[in-house]
Length: 473
Image (cartoon, rainbow, N blue to C red):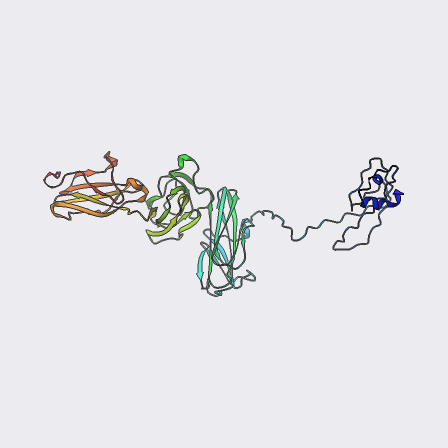
Protein backbone atom coordinates (compact mmCIF):
# COMPACT_ATOMS: atom_id res chain seq x y z
CA UNK A 1 0.00 0.00 0.00
CA UNK A 2 2.82 2.39 0.80
CA UNK A 3 4.05 2.13 -2.80
CA UNK A 4 0.78 3.60 -4.07
CA UNK A 5 0.95 6.67 -1.81
CA UNK A 6 4.62 7.61 -2.07
CA UNK A 7 3.83 11.20 -3.12
CA UNK A 8 1.56 11.61 -0.12
CA UNK A 9 4.24 10.20 2.20
CA UNK A 10 6.75 12.75 0.91
CA UNK A 11 4.29 15.62 1.32
CA UNK A 12 3.24 14.62 4.85
CA UNK A 13 6.49 13.97 6.67
CA UNK A 14 4.70 13.00 9.84
CA UNK A 15 4.01 9.49 8.46
CA UNK A 16 7.37 8.10 9.58
CA UNK A 17 6.30 4.50 9.11
CA UNK A 18 6.01 4.89 5.36
CA UNK A 19 9.48 6.37 5.05
CA UNK A 20 10.98 3.55 7.07
CA UNK A 21 9.19 0.74 5.15
CA UNK A 22 11.48 -2.09 4.02
CA UNK A 23 12.08 -3.27 0.47
CA UNK A 24 11.42 0.16 -1.15
CA UNK A 25 11.90 0.19 -4.86
CA UNK A 26 13.83 3.32 -5.97
CA UNK A 27 11.83 6.05 -7.63
CA UNK A 28 12.76 6.55 -11.32
CA UNK A 29 15.18 9.48 -11.82
CA UNK A 30 13.56 12.40 -13.64
CA UNK A 31 14.84 13.37 -17.03
CA UNK A 32 17.05 16.50 -17.28
CA UNK A 33 15.42 19.85 -17.80
CA UNK A 34 16.05 21.52 -21.13
CA UNK A 35 18.83 24.10 -21.41
CA UNK A 36 17.45 27.60 -22.02
CA UNK A 37 17.68 28.50 -25.69
CA UNK A 38 20.68 30.54 -26.78
CA UNK A 39 20.52 33.43 -29.22
CA UNK A 40 20.59 30.83 -32.07
CA UNK A 41 17.92 28.09 -31.40
CA UNK A 42 18.72 24.58 -32.46
CA UNK A 43 16.65 21.33 -32.48
CA UNK A 44 16.75 19.35 -29.23
CA UNK A 45 18.94 16.27 -29.09
CA UNK A 46 17.16 13.25 -27.53
CA UNK A 47 18.70 12.16 -24.27
CA UNK A 48 19.71 8.53 -23.89
CA UNK A 49 17.68 6.23 -21.66
CA UNK A 50 18.84 6.48 -18.05
CA UNK A 51 19.43 3.09 -16.44
CA UNK A 52 17.77 2.05 -13.22
CA UNK A 53 19.75 3.01 -10.14
CA UNK A 54 20.16 0.48 -7.35
CA UNK A 55 20.42 1.37 -3.68
CA UNK A 56 24.08 0.46 -3.39
CA UNK A 57 25.55 3.94 -2.71
CA UNK A 58 25.19 5.39 -6.23
CA UNK A 59 25.46 9.21 -6.13
CA UNK A 60 22.26 10.86 -7.37
CA UNK A 61 22.57 13.74 -9.84
CA UNK A 62 21.77 17.36 -8.87
CA UNK A 63 18.32 18.56 -9.79
CA UNK A 64 18.06 19.85 -13.34
CA UNK A 65 21.40 18.33 -14.51
CA UNK A 66 21.40 15.04 -16.41
CA UNK A 67 23.81 12.25 -15.51
CA UNK A 68 25.75 11.04 -18.53
CA UNK A 69 25.11 7.41 -19.46
CA UNK A 70 27.80 4.84 -18.90
CA UNK A 71 27.99 4.06 -22.60
CA UNK A 72 26.11 5.29 -25.63
CA UNK A 73 26.46 5.26 -29.36
CA UNK A 74 25.06 8.79 -29.67
CA UNK A 75 27.78 11.49 -29.22
CA UNK A 76 27.12 14.17 -26.60
CA UNK A 77 26.33 17.60 -28.00
CA UNK A 78 28.99 20.35 -27.70
CA UNK A 79 28.40 22.66 -24.72
CA UNK A 80 26.88 26.04 -25.42
CA UNK A 81 29.26 28.92 -24.45
CA UNK A 82 28.18 30.79 -21.32
CA UNK A 83 27.37 34.44 -22.14
CA UNK A 84 27.97 37.07 -19.46
CA UNK A 85 25.16 39.59 -19.15
CA UNK A 86 26.08 42.94 -20.65
CA UNK A 87 25.39 44.74 -17.36
CA UNK A 88 28.06 42.76 -15.50
CA UNK A 89 31.05 45.09 -14.83
CA UNK A 90 34.28 43.73 -16.24
CA UNK A 91 37.56 45.14 -14.92
CA UNK A 92 39.36 46.81 -17.84
CA UNK A 93 42.85 45.70 -18.67
CA UNK A 94 45.62 48.31 -18.40
CA UNK A 95 46.75 49.00 -21.95
CA UNK A 96 50.35 49.62 -22.81
CA UNK A 97 50.81 53.29 -23.76
CA UNK A 98 52.12 53.89 -27.24
CA UNK A 99 54.16 57.10 -27.08
CA UNK A 100 53.97 57.73 -30.81
CA UNK A 101 50.17 57.36 -31.04
CA UNK A 102 49.43 60.86 -29.73
CA UNK A 103 51.34 64.02 -30.58
CA UNK A 104 52.92 65.37 -27.41
CA UNK A 105 54.16 68.86 -26.67
CA UNK A 106 57.35 69.16 -24.67
CA UNK A 107 55.70 71.58 -22.24
CA UNK A 108 51.96 71.10 -22.55
CA UNK A 109 48.83 69.30 -23.72
CA UNK A 110 47.56 68.53 -27.20
CA UNK A 111 44.15 70.21 -27.08
CA UNK A 112 41.27 69.42 -29.46
CA UNK A 113 38.25 71.75 -29.23
CA UNK A 114 34.84 70.64 -30.58
CA UNK A 115 31.77 72.77 -31.35
CA UNK A 116 29.51 70.20 -29.67
CA UNK A 117 29.30 68.65 -26.18
CA UNK A 118 30.03 65.10 -27.40
CA UNK A 119 33.63 65.29 -28.71
CA UNK A 120 32.19 64.16 -32.04
CA UNK A 121 33.31 64.94 -35.56
CA UNK A 122 36.39 66.93 -36.43
CA UNK A 123 37.76 69.46 -33.92
CA UNK A 124 37.28 73.12 -34.78
CA UNK A 125 40.61 74.01 -33.14
CA UNK A 126 43.77 72.02 -32.34
CA UNK A 127 46.48 73.71 -30.31
CA UNK A 128 48.96 73.18 -27.44
CA UNK A 129 47.81 74.26 -23.98
CA UNK A 130 50.57 74.70 -21.42
CA UNK A 131 48.26 73.86 -18.54
CA UNK A 132 44.62 72.83 -18.00
CA UNK A 133 43.66 75.80 -15.89
CA UNK A 134 40.75 77.63 -17.49
CA UNK A 135 37.91 79.76 -16.19
CA UNK A 136 36.10 80.92 -19.32
CA UNK A 137 33.09 82.04 -17.28
CA UNK A 138 30.34 82.90 -19.82
CA UNK A 139 32.68 83.31 -22.81
CA UNK A 140 33.75 80.95 -25.57
CA UNK A 141 37.15 79.24 -25.16
CA UNK A 142 38.37 80.53 -28.55
CA UNK A 143 37.20 82.12 -31.77
CA UNK A 144 34.98 79.86 -33.84
CA UNK A 145 33.64 77.97 -30.80
CA UNK A 146 30.31 78.50 -29.03
CA UNK A 147 30.15 79.86 -25.49
CA UNK A 148 27.92 76.91 -24.48
CA UNK A 149 27.71 73.23 -25.43
CA UNK A 150 31.32 72.72 -26.48
CA UNK A 151 33.83 70.02 -25.51
CA UNK A 152 37.60 69.57 -25.31
CA UNK A 153 39.98 66.61 -25.24
CA UNK A 154 43.49 67.07 -23.84
CA UNK A 155 46.23 64.44 -24.14
CA UNK A 156 49.86 64.36 -23.11
CA UNK A 157 52.58 62.14 -21.69
CA UNK A 158 54.34 62.97 -18.43
CA UNK A 159 57.22 61.35 -16.58
CA UNK A 160 56.30 60.54 -12.99
CA UNK A 161 58.26 59.02 -10.14
CA UNK A 162 57.08 55.74 -8.60
CA UNK A 163 54.55 56.10 -5.79
CA UNK A 164 51.01 57.07 -4.91
CA UNK A 165 49.70 60.08 -6.85
CA UNK A 166 46.60 62.19 -6.25
CA UNK A 167 44.81 63.58 -9.31
CA UNK A 168 42.45 66.50 -8.78
CA UNK A 169 40.06 68.24 -11.15
CA UNK A 170 37.80 71.23 -10.60
CA UNK A 171 35.09 71.45 -13.22
CA UNK A 172 31.83 72.98 -14.37
CA UNK A 173 30.28 70.81 -16.04
CA UNK A 174 31.34 67.24 -17.02
CA UNK A 175 34.79 65.60 -16.99
CA UNK A 176 36.59 62.31 -17.43
CA UNK A 177 40.26 61.73 -16.52
CA UNK A 178 42.27 58.76 -17.79
CA UNK A 179 45.74 57.56 -16.78
CA UNK A 180 47.27 55.04 -19.17
CA UNK A 181 43.81 54.38 -20.59
CA UNK A 182 42.16 53.68 -17.23
CA UNK A 183 39.31 56.00 -16.15
CA UNK A 184 40.12 57.36 -12.69
CA UNK A 185 37.52 60.16 -12.63
CA UNK A 186 34.24 59.79 -14.55
CA UNK A 187 31.75 62.60 -13.91
CA UNK A 188 30.14 63.12 -17.29
CA UNK A 189 27.11 65.14 -16.23
CA UNK A 190 26.11 68.79 -15.72
CA UNK A 191 27.19 70.37 -12.44
CA UNK A 192 28.11 73.60 -10.76
CA UNK A 193 31.83 74.09 -10.04
CA UNK A 194 32.96 71.08 -8.01
CA UNK A 195 36.28 69.35 -7.23
CA UNK A 196 36.94 65.61 -7.65
CA UNK A 197 39.95 63.63 -6.39
CA UNK A 198 41.36 60.21 -7.23
CA UNK A 199 44.45 58.43 -5.88
CA UNK A 200 46.49 56.02 -7.97
CA UNK A 201 49.73 54.03 -7.53
CA UNK A 202 52.05 54.47 -10.51
CA UNK A 203 55.37 53.01 -11.56
CA UNK A 204 58.29 55.23 -12.50
CA UNK A 205 58.35 56.33 -16.12
CA UNK A 206 56.18 57.87 -18.82
CA UNK A 207 52.41 57.85 -18.34
CA UNK A 208 49.69 58.79 -20.79
CA UNK A 209 47.14 61.31 -19.48
CA UNK A 210 43.84 62.19 -21.11
CA UNK A 211 41.17 64.64 -19.99
CA UNK A 212 37.73 64.93 -21.62
CA UNK A 213 35.56 67.92 -20.77
CA UNK A 214 32.26 69.38 -21.87
CA UNK A 215 30.33 72.53 -21.07
CA UNK A 216 26.58 72.13 -20.74
CA UNK A 217 25.84 75.84 -20.53
CA UNK A 218 26.38 79.06 -18.59
CA UNK A 219 29.78 79.17 -16.84
CA UNK A 220 32.69 76.99 -18.03
CA UNK A 221 35.59 76.00 -15.76
CA UNK A 222 38.16 73.21 -15.81
CA UNK A 223 41.40 72.80 -13.83
CA UNK A 224 43.54 69.66 -13.58
CA UNK A 225 46.52 69.02 -11.32
CA UNK A 226 48.37 66.12 -9.73
CA UNK A 227 50.61 65.74 -6.69
CA UNK A 228 52.50 62.96 -4.92
CA UNK A 229 50.27 61.56 -2.18
CA UNK A 230 53.01 61.53 0.47
CA UNK A 231 53.07 65.28 0.96
CA UNK A 232 54.94 65.17 4.25
CA UNK A 233 58.15 63.57 5.52
CA UNK A 234 57.61 60.65 7.90
CA UNK A 235 61.16 60.44 9.26
CA UNK A 236 61.26 62.31 12.63
CA UNK A 237 64.71 63.60 11.70
CA UNK A 238 63.07 65.51 8.83
CA UNK A 239 60.03 66.75 10.76
CA UNK A 240 61.29 70.34 10.97
CA UNK A 241 62.56 70.64 7.40
CA UNK A 242 61.25 70.68 3.87
CA UNK A 243 61.86 67.77 1.56
CA UNK A 244 63.18 69.46 -1.59
CA UNK A 245 63.09 67.64 -4.94
CA UNK A 246 64.82 69.47 -7.82
CA UNK A 247 64.15 68.67 -11.49
CA UNK A 248 66.09 69.49 -14.66
CA UNK A 249 62.95 70.68 -16.47
CA UNK A 250 60.12 73.18 -15.94
CA UNK A 251 57.43 70.54 -15.42
CA UNK A 252 58.45 68.66 -12.25
CA UNK A 253 58.68 65.64 -14.57
CA UNK A 254 60.53 62.39 -14.11
CA UNK A 255 63.03 61.52 -11.40
CA UNK A 256 64.53 64.48 -9.49
CA UNK A 257 68.03 65.50 -10.52
CA UNK A 258 68.76 65.65 -6.79
CA UNK A 259 66.95 65.90 -3.45
CA UNK A 260 67.90 67.54 -0.17
CA UNK A 261 66.48 68.91 3.09
CA UNK A 262 65.87 72.67 3.11
CA UNK A 263 65.24 74.55 6.34
CA UNK A 264 63.08 77.16 4.55
CA UNK A 265 61.68 77.90 1.11
CA UNK A 266 63.42 81.25 0.83
CA UNK A 267 65.80 81.43 -2.13
CA UNK A 268 67.25 84.14 -4.33
CA UNK A 269 69.60 82.40 -6.76
CA UNK A 270 69.94 85.39 -9.09
CA UNK A 271 71.21 84.18 -12.45
CA UNK A 272 72.53 80.97 -10.92
CA UNK A 273 70.92 77.60 -10.23
CA UNK A 274 70.01 75.74 -7.05
CA UNK A 275 73.03 73.42 -7.22
CA UNK A 276 73.32 69.77 -8.12
CA UNK A 277 74.50 70.65 -11.62
CA UNK A 278 71.27 72.51 -12.53
CA UNK A 279 71.68 75.74 -14.47
CA UNK A 280 69.88 78.99 -13.74
CA UNK A 281 67.05 78.32 -16.22
CA UNK A 282 64.57 75.59 -17.15
CA UNK A 283 64.44 73.87 -13.77
CA UNK A 284 61.69 73.25 -11.20
CA UNK A 285 61.40 72.19 -7.57
CA UNK A 286 58.85 70.74 -5.18
CA UNK A 287 59.04 71.12 -1.40
CA UNK A 288 56.83 69.08 0.97
CA UNK A 289 56.39 69.27 4.71
CA UNK A 290 53.96 68.52 7.54
CA UNK A 291 53.33 71.57 9.76
CA UNK A 292 51.24 72.12 12.87
CA UNK A 293 48.97 75.18 12.71
CA UNK A 294 47.08 76.53 15.73
CA UNK A 295 43.55 77.15 14.53
CA UNK A 296 42.86 80.62 13.17
CA UNK A 297 43.05 82.89 10.15
CA UNK A 298 46.37 83.03 8.29
CA UNK A 299 47.98 85.08 5.56
CA UNK A 300 50.05 83.04 3.10
CA UNK A 301 52.64 84.87 0.98
CA UNK A 302 54.67 83.82 -2.03
CA UNK A 303 57.27 85.75 -4.05
CA UNK A 304 58.48 84.21 -7.26
CA UNK A 305 60.25 84.69 -10.53
CA UNK A 306 58.78 82.74 -12.41
CA UNK A 307 55.89 80.35 -11.51
CA UNK A 308 54.77 79.19 -8.06
CA UNK A 309 52.04 77.10 -6.46
CA UNK A 310 51.27 76.66 -2.75
CA UNK A 311 49.10 73.73 -1.63
CA UNK A 312 47.47 73.23 1.76
CA UNK A 313 46.00 69.75 2.29
CA UNK A 314 45.82 69.17 -1.50
CA UNK A 315 44.00 72.44 -2.17
CA UNK A 316 45.85 75.06 -4.24
CA UNK A 317 45.73 78.27 -2.21
CA UNK A 318 48.16 80.15 -4.48
CA UNK A 319 48.24 79.04 -8.13
CA UNK A 320 50.42 81.24 -10.35
CA UNK A 321 52.00 78.69 -12.71
CA UNK A 322 53.23 80.99 -15.47
CA UNK A 323 56.32 82.98 -16.44
CA UNK A 324 56.52 86.41 -14.82
CA UNK A 325 58.17 89.66 -15.78
CA UNK A 326 60.15 89.74 -12.54
CA UNK A 327 59.82 89.48 -8.79
CA UNK A 328 56.05 89.23 -8.11
CA UNK A 329 54.29 88.76 -4.75
CA UNK A 330 51.04 86.86 -4.16
CA UNK A 331 48.94 86.86 -0.97
CA UNK A 332 46.06 84.65 0.18
CA UNK A 333 44.14 84.78 3.49
CA UNK A 334 42.15 81.82 4.77
CA UNK A 335 41.02 80.02 7.92
CA UNK A 336 43.06 76.99 8.98
CA UNK A 337 41.82 74.33 11.39
CA UNK A 338 43.87 73.42 14.45
CA UNK A 339 46.19 70.47 13.78
CA UNK A 340 48.79 69.07 11.37
CA UNK A 341 48.53 70.03 7.70
CA UNK A 342 50.40 68.97 4.57
CA UNK A 343 52.02 71.93 2.83
CA UNK A 344 53.49 71.68 -0.67
CA UNK A 345 55.31 74.40 -2.63
CA UNK A 346 56.03 74.04 -6.36
CA UNK A 347 58.22 76.38 -8.39
CA UNK A 348 59.61 76.62 -11.90
CA UNK A 349 62.27 78.87 -13.40
CA UNK A 350 62.07 79.76 -17.09
CA UNK A 351 64.95 82.22 -17.42
CA UNK A 352 66.48 85.37 -16.01
CA UNK A 353 66.64 85.78 -12.23
CA UNK A 354 65.53 82.81 -10.12
CA UNK A 355 63.70 83.59 -6.88
CA UNK A 356 61.12 81.87 -4.68
CA UNK A 357 60.13 82.78 -1.12
CA UNK A 358 57.12 81.38 0.74
CA UNK A 359 55.83 82.12 4.25
CA UNK A 360 52.71 82.66 6.36
CA UNK A 361 51.63 84.32 9.57
CA UNK A 362 48.52 84.30 11.79
CA UNK A 363 46.34 87.35 11.26
CA UNK A 364 45.60 87.95 14.95
CA UNK A 365 49.28 88.70 15.72
CA UNK A 366 50.87 92.07 15.03
CA UNK A 367 54.06 90.90 13.29
CA UNK A 368 56.02 94.11 13.72
CA UNK A 369 58.30 95.55 16.41
CA UNK A 370 59.63 98.98 17.41
CA UNK A 371 63.36 99.80 17.63
CA UNK A 372 64.91 102.54 19.79
CA UNK A 373 68.57 103.60 19.37
CA UNK A 374 70.75 106.73 19.16
CA UNK A 375 73.62 108.37 17.27
CA UNK A 376 75.29 111.74 16.83
CA UNK A 377 73.18 114.55 15.47
CA UNK A 378 75.60 115.05 12.55
CA UNK A 379 77.92 112.88 10.46
CA UNK A 380 76.32 109.75 11.87
CA UNK A 381 73.81 107.12 10.73
CA UNK A 382 72.35 103.74 11.72
CA UNK A 383 72.40 100.70 9.46
CA UNK A 384 69.78 97.98 10.08
CA UNK A 385 69.73 94.46 8.71
CA UNK A 386 67.38 91.56 9.37
CA UNK A 387 68.28 87.89 9.01
CA UNK A 388 66.26 86.16 6.32
CA UNK A 389 65.08 82.57 6.84
CA UNK A 390 67.90 81.55 4.48
CA UNK A 391 70.53 82.97 6.86
CA UNK A 392 71.42 86.08 4.89
CA UNK A 393 71.39 89.65 6.07
CA UNK A 394 68.82 91.84 4.31
CA UNK A 395 69.70 95.56 4.31
CA UNK A 396 66.48 97.40 5.11
CA UNK A 397 67.84 100.74 3.88
CA UNK A 398 71.22 100.83 2.14
CA UNK A 399 71.72 104.58 2.75
CA UNK A 400 71.05 104.14 6.48
CA UNK A 401 68.89 106.10 8.95
CA UNK A 402 69.61 109.51 10.40
CA UNK A 403 68.27 110.81 13.74
CA UNK A 404 64.58 111.69 13.92
CA UNK A 405 64.56 113.31 17.38
CA UNK A 406 66.65 115.75 19.41
CA UNK A 407 69.94 114.54 20.86
CA UNK A 408 70.47 112.00 18.06
CA UNK A 409 67.57 109.77 19.07
CA UNK A 410 66.22 107.35 16.44
CA UNK A 411 62.89 105.56 16.78
CA UNK A 412 61.68 103.16 14.09
CA UNK A 413 58.12 101.88 14.38
CA UNK A 414 56.71 98.83 12.62
CA UNK A 415 59.86 96.93 11.62
CA UNK A 416 58.75 93.62 10.09
CA UNK A 417 59.10 90.35 11.98
CA UNK A 418 58.94 87.17 9.89
CA UNK A 419 56.47 84.67 11.38
CA UNK A 420 58.87 81.85 10.47
CA UNK A 421 60.81 82.77 13.64
CA UNK A 422 57.73 82.61 15.87
CA UNK A 423 57.43 84.32 19.23
CA UNK A 424 61.19 84.19 19.81
CA UNK A 425 61.56 87.00 17.31
CA UNK A 426 63.59 87.61 14.17
CA UNK A 427 67.35 88.24 14.45
CA UNK A 428 68.39 91.79 13.52
CA UNK A 429 71.78 93.47 13.22
CA UNK A 430 72.18 97.18 14.11
CA UNK A 431 75.31 99.19 13.24
CA UNK A 432 76.40 102.64 14.43
CA UNK A 433 78.44 104.60 11.87
CA UNK A 434 80.21 107.91 12.56
CA UNK A 435 82.12 109.84 9.88
CA UNK A 436 82.28 106.81 7.62
CA UNK A 437 83.58 104.43 10.29
CA UNK A 438 81.80 101.48 11.92
CA UNK A 439 81.89 102.28 15.64
CA UNK A 440 79.56 99.72 17.21
CA UNK A 441 77.41 96.79 16.13
CA UNK A 442 74.89 94.60 17.87
CA UNK A 443 73.44 91.23 16.83
CA UNK A 444 76.16 90.22 14.32
CA UNK A 445 75.81 86.50 14.99
CA UNK A 446 78.24 85.59 12.20
CA UNK A 447 80.93 87.60 14.03
CA UNK A 448 80.19 85.79 17.31
CA UNK A 449 77.90 88.41 18.86
CA UNK A 450 74.76 87.52 20.78
CA UNK A 451 71.54 87.53 18.77
CA UNK A 452 69.55 90.77 18.84
CA UNK A 453 65.92 89.79 18.27
CA UNK A 454 62.85 91.83 17.47
CA UNK A 455 59.79 90.09 18.91
CA UNK A 456 56.28 90.69 17.51
CA UNK A 457 54.62 93.65 19.22
CA UNK A 458 57.70 94.45 21.35
CA UNK A 459 59.78 97.59 21.96
CA UNK A 460 63.52 96.81 21.67
CA UNK A 461 66.53 99.05 22.45
CA UNK A 462 70.20 98.83 21.53
CA UNK A 463 72.64 98.50 24.42
CA UNK A 464 75.01 101.42 23.78
CA UNK A 465 74.56 104.63 25.75
CA UNK A 466 73.26 107.85 24.27
CA UNK A 467 74.28 111.49 24.60
CA UNK A 468 77.80 112.32 25.81
CA UNK A 469 78.53 108.66 26.54
CA UNK A 470 77.86 107.60 22.97
CA UNK A 471 80.83 105.61 21.58
CA UNK A 472 83.01 107.46 19.12
CA UNK A 473 85.72 106.46 16.66
